[in-house]
Length: 388
Image 1: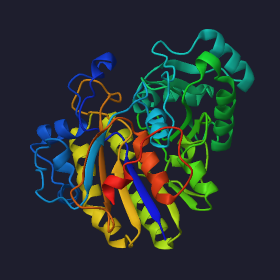
Image 2: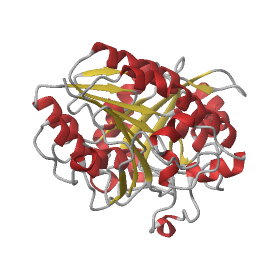
Image 3: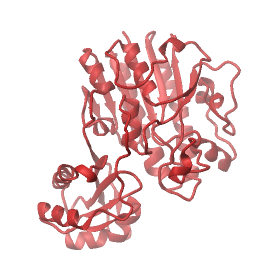
């Protein structure tokens, strides 16, 4: 029974790409800079797989005989957002980046949106989600006007207090936005950002919901499902791919819960593909420039890695990677244009395989498709023969 488990450590980049200067990300190195700022990282299990063999990371030295395959991947698509990175892993390479709105969305669109939802909105600016609810949350509570904001990513985010605009109503407003944001306004994701609390103490809840655009063609999850295999999604995976190919889905409430639910899927012993996004690295620590807690989250994941490895059966292959960087040591609170690490482990995998620098994230998707015996993807070159 062949199974692939893919864990995406959201935002855990491993050094700037050659075109990082085009994005203002010179010097970004999420793993390397966190380790340097912290005086070293303690990641013994990732180290055993070969993490320290990919690039210099203080505290994570190279192993003479790593237990896994190791390398790093470059992003071929323009951009550095969640959708772009995940789509490329699944076989979609973009010709142009999703649009961003550093000055907020056009006024004519905002007026048309307000007319459709029957409410005025406030905000319409680039902002941190945690900061803007503190600043505008009380006005929202008093007026019922949703808070609209964006970021350096291609997103249209709508924040609302769950006791002012109930979840289902907020989700309906987001669906209207998704429908309207087309053409030059076709952002990668519309995101519902519900929150609770009172003035001075507003906090986001775990009832976030993403509305992604449809992929332009078949993706990895589609071809795995068409092969008659299970596609099990943990966390925001289903949302990112607009549900494509997913047969089983569970949301997650952070990294710990995401690992728990990944373990539960592994224990079900269904043939196919398990894909997990662990979002805390990015959402809680990267965007908030919280170096210490980012480091602790990395070490906590490393501490749980043996639980995953112990459940792997003869024909299981585990891949660990990321979708972009988000270096918390830089002034920026946005994603960074970085290579992402690539670690591979399984009983069939040749230990110590140096996979080098892959020219596209799509090589990973192509390799998974190759191993599971599906039709080939639109993009990517399989490296399966180097692994087994």
